Length: 417
Image 1 (cartoon, rainbow, N blue to C red):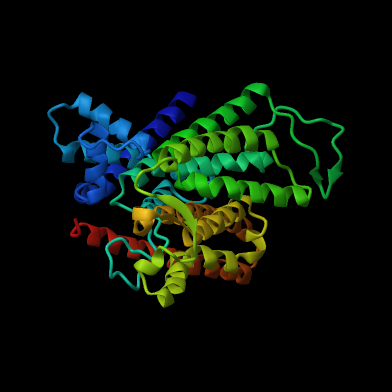
Image 2 (cartoon, rainbow, N blue to C red; image 1 turned 120 degrees about the horizontal axis):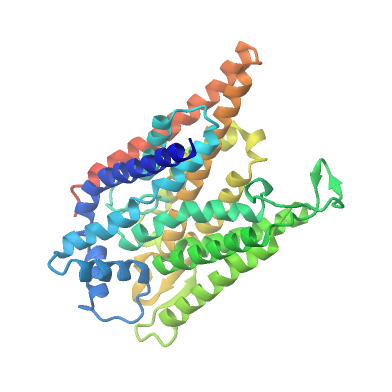
């Protein structure tokens, strides 16, 4: 029976990989002709020699396929590299949504939600530039380094919950002398050594790989985790300081420090990091439009938080993702690169990544609430059941608007490059 279940899960993973590749291959076969894909490909194989471009994960993968398939064209190698990363994106998302559904949703519904999340964009009112500048756009096709980073987002987001949430931490023992406050143990869980260090090592390794792909998520994640940990500690909630420090903060500081030294120290072109509100976006988008575009980027998560405000205030994943998003948004709006890279907007990626994780956390919360409400519906009145269903319907309609905009952007990208 156990082998049968494992075989079914493996088959399900293979189906997910195939469907993700099938979904993303058409648009990526066009996007690989973007200037970003071309320049990073030639950087990877050594046609262009620039020492301060640090996106090693994509470059090393290109070199691997270049050696493996020496007669393949640039287009084929770029496409295979992009699909290698992007096909992995739905795996952790699907399994988290499946866990949150508590067997109240069939697999095909969870699969549709997962694939919808992969192409979700802001609700688009203005599309006067092909990069959707001014929005916090969670789906970007033209950037190879974003493709390399995206598989790490959901795993890192879920691993970061272990810093704060006991139920994910698989404890093996707890001291019987721990005082209790409000029905919860107020002291830390004692983990098994193997489990604790495997989680810490996995977090550190994934964070280093993600930073080598693109540092954007790390830049938002670490201050977000630290702020959230301080808040939790202030209100006497559990924080695994060892996991936070060794699994996240220390490897992030090492990776980001190395990137900073290799990118900005003694750089001949005068590039630097500066602080200025809307300095980058002001070059691309009318200032009056930016607040509206930001709001259109978060209609679904904002509406869900308002509709379920009582339950949302107690949901760890949702609140942590909101904190990381706010940090990422502030970084994107206030920090820029000076010199010749001013208009490139490389710090905008931070908000793009953070809003994707926020969308994921919101969808996970919504699926969980739907499942809980379905379980409670058997013992509740028809009036209560109707009221709960109304919130869910409104939320899903708003998510559908994001997905429809994502389809629009998907089709638009097919004709852009």
